[in-house]
Length: 110
Image (cartoon, helix red, strand yellow):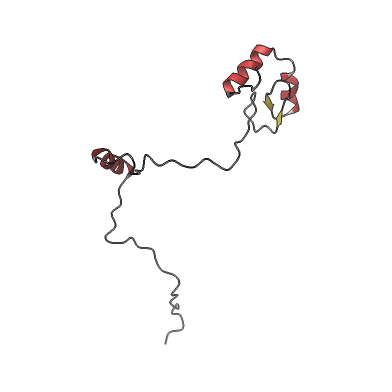
């Protein structure tokens, strides 16, 4: 008996692809689905919808684009530092409205 022989570990199994398994690229799958006449109720790769995310959306500064933990209660602009807040205090209202429009903010009042 050899002392240098490695013991066979039964829990370790090398991964091998099954011989009868066919792997297709996404382009081939989409072409196959378009060519078939499937009912509207039958799901395909392109009709499946993901559920909404449970993770809250990240908030970014309207001025610098950095992660913004703060928001101005009067203008509703988000900011990341005290320097940005100081520069926001001197902005005219039309520029503030422009930043809010770019972000897609719509006020519930008015």
